[in-house]
Length: 552
Image (cartoon, rainbow, N blue to C red; front, top):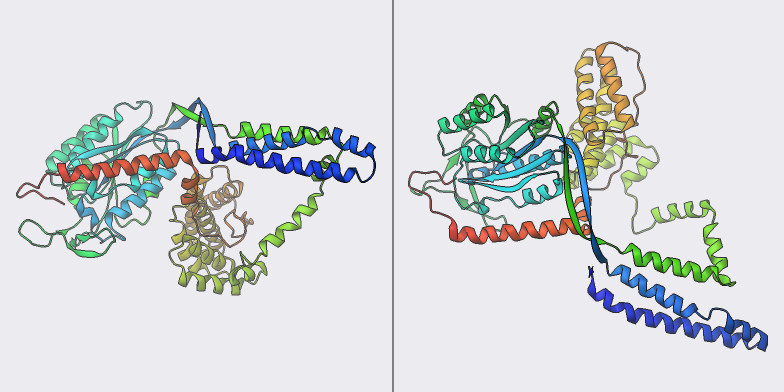
């Protein structure tokens, strides 16, 4: 048996003893007051509650033990999914630090890879990082949160060899997929700028082998066609200069469409354009039609949390103590069980009106259904808080309610690229609703608006497959586009994205979830330790670039 907080466990006897002395003192006071009436009341007071202090003290002891987080035993967990096998390969060479794609090629690739991992929940995913050599960061697994931790740790400094070797990455991805089931399609998704130091012939030869083995290749291009310099920054992000070659000249890098196109053609694969705003969505749409197979993964979880056991014993002991005494404790328990439901409801507005969480001007206007003022207030908030995806969602939703289609389209499209699945779903829902309304008003471009609505609701249903309102609106868009129903129906939803009002708090739940989930904390510590170890070894094992060979 282990405990998450042994220090709290050490306090359990002290707290239990303090509670016993407090309860015993309260009992002596009760007996002394009973003596003011008669000897008979004294005898009754002495007979009643004789075990009360002990019961309360033991309950307090068990409650503190529960707070200490006891763990014991193990449990085998079997996860069964229907998915495909997909390997994500990310180019971490220094050319990916070029900032011709904001914030940089690498940061954009990691952002799209994170969204892809979230959208492909249930599929077996693996991760490869490559520069001059390739490294398996994670084997095929359905543990998406662990893969996200490894994505956060990717950086050019973890590579022991500079340059870009596309051929070894494709070869290692194929080897990683060999262990997967052939009943499902096998896919390699490569995020790279294509500036490889290996020859085009070797890249195309490996791509042809992927096609021969039945592995699908999807190349995601990053960067621009115009040459860009590679910034060199310190650990605080300050610019120190630009990457130079062995002759002291500043290096300029650009996207190699010839290499990417040749590899995609040789593998009969797909090239996702660099200027596409939603690369992860394009990859997700491609793999949506691929063949999937049933897969079962079993893992053993050691030291299961058992805090509920002492807590349940403490509650049972207190309930038994209260039920066996004809005192005010039993009356209080009965009053608590039968308290009217309206009494709890009346407390909710008081908490909402608390000065600790005041309603903003925009929220107050929204509550009063003053749409024009709410719209203006949310746009004003967006001007000062443009980094928060929720601010874009709020401004877009208010614009949608105020019939400002252009502003709603721009703001909701920005919010739909959020990494928060809930906020992203609500933004997509409202984008579909906006397209349905525009289809009613703009009959000349009716089919185009209906196609936009259908696309938005299909993406939303990938995040929440069982959402009734999204299904209803998707069916409405499909029928109207097909000409089966030309009558105007009221779309389900009122601009809230299935989430309530137009207001949404900024998304910080992901970080908060990681801080409370102990399993993910462990994975994060492991990944950070592995990253530190790899970086320490890089200083010893990193080989100097050969003359004439690219080191970026």
